[in-house]
Image (cartoon, rainbow, N blue to C red; front, side, top):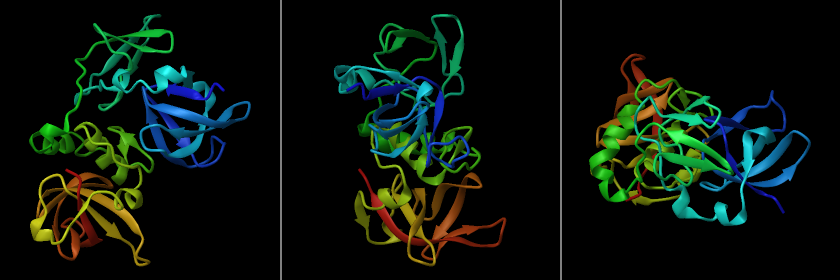
Length: 259
C-alpha cells in the first residue's frame, strides 16, 4: 500500500471536505509527513504524522515516500529557523520560500531530499531542543507578532490561535496537538493564574463551556495570542483584556504546563 507521503510545497491546505471550496481546517508545511487513508482521482483523505489530524488534500501537493523513510524520525529532525528568508532551490533552479518551523527531510551538507528530489537549503537549519525552552520560547513567540489571524493557518502569513502555540512549541522541541480543545487535554494543570510561568498555555472557553481559544503566557499577567493578529495583551482572573476595545475578549478556563 503506497500510503506514506510528504508535503512537497511550502504550505498546503488541509480541507474539511474534498473540494477547493471547502474550509481550510489546517495546513501542511514543507516536509510534513502524512498517511493517505483514502484517495479519489484528485483528492485524498490524510492523517498527519505530527499531530494525527485528518482532512482532505489535493493529491498533487504530496510526494510518495517509502515506509522506511516515513518512520525515520532522525531524518525529519532539522527545521527552518526564525527568519524570513528560508529559501530552498530545487534542482531545476526554481525557489521555494518556507515558513519557520518547516521540516527539511534528510538534511545533509546544505541539501535536503523529498523522495528523489534534491533541494539546496540556503539557511542554517537547526534541531530544536526542549532543554532550552525557557531561554527561547519568548523570542520564538514574539517572532510571529503581528502575523494576521487565519483560520487553519500555521505560517507567518496567517496563523490561528492553536496553530501559533503549536508551531512555537515545535520550534522549541515539543510536539502538541492541533486544536485548542485537544491541547487543553495535554500538559499539567497550573492551579492559579498567579503561579503561571513563561511558556505555559492558557485556554479560554465560550458560553457553552467549549474551549475555543489558546494563548502563550509571557508572565502571570501578560499573554501572546492570535486574535485578529498575533498580539500581546494583559490577562487577569477574568481573562484577556483588550485595551483597544476596552473590554474582556476571552474568558479564562484553565492553564496548562508542558515542560
